[in-house]
Length: 514
Image 1 (spheres, rainbow, N blue to C red):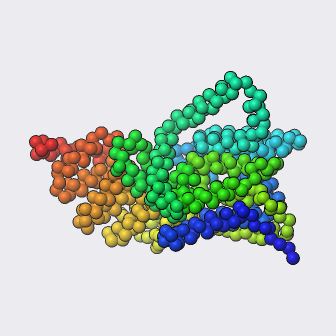
Image 2 (image 1 turned 180 degrees about the horizontal axis):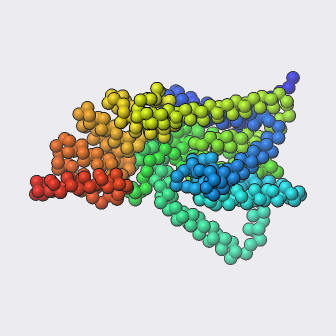
Image 3 (image 1 turned 45 degrees about the vertical axis):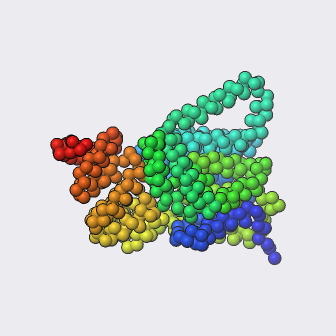
């Protein structure tokens, strides 16, 4: 009787991570979370690849092919033949913005560079790999992703570390010093290239540290980062009114550091499992396994400054790479029945991907239909949109224009627990004001104000609330606080203009009091 592959430590750790994620939500956090499609896709992909023969060659070939597809699509977008997925960037590949594209191409560069070394004996293969490497590298530069550049450098450094180390030992002291200075200048240049974006990441990590400190052992549960981060950011600015990050605050639903995200959602238990997996990978493995390990290192470097765990491309990529890692004491599978089962699991994985993408497309279509029909085609179950927070936020924003007051308030109250933003909180405060619940409306607006201190709308709604309550003095105080704020857009300019006119019209009555 043929046997299935023996379980390795990494297999057990992967299963333990999935079990902990679900059990933590159900029994410790006691929260409902129905968006486990990404977890299911990763597990099916991992199990399927794990059972296949020659899995390293298969996965590396698929990564190379996929990287080429992304590079070609990016070239077509850059040249204007295909529309980009983002209005502000000319090339995004199949991603929604160029950041993840840069990370994926960085892995592709690492894989192509490794395969080129193995193709040295055959010049035709070497030339093809060199051309592909050049194309992917050029589009990596065009993607303008600093995290992607760093990921490519780290992956290549790991891949060629023995050669680099030998060259380093032969270098003179002044050459080593020059290399260190150049490296420091390069890193500094990368930081200054988008200094404001870098400052925004520092703010996110600082606030995420507060989330971790509140629940370091078990975290806050799956998906909790997007649900709770903005409230933690509001608390941060409430306690640090003079923070230098005030002008860098924005709407955030991703941590830009997957290790931080794992800690904030799954606690130290999740981090310990990840570290256990890393410690059981055979980092000294030779041959094509070394290319796999270099690709893992590249993804890990990218994950320190981005959010690959939130993107299905990277969920599949990481699961496949992890399944290829050398398992101590675990030989290559050669059983036919295991290969058949692996193929079935991969087919199920593809089905799950198709289901999740179809579900998101249907949700997007429901929201579009709702907007185009001016609310006549209401979404039957808006809770189904919770797995796509951006769609839920769009739906809730437009729903306030068409739905009855009671339904609109209920929808907004649900939405701000899933994807809180200052604008949604302002909309919810207006619903409270309609019920004459001014205290609750003011509390909600204060939270919105601290979420993004430089955003004008929460201050404007507080001003309107003060006027509605007849508190002219408070309204004037709010206007004075807004006098030094910058103008975001024409809507903000209109708000500031209205407040200035009110201030001028009430000056003759409150000049002595002021």
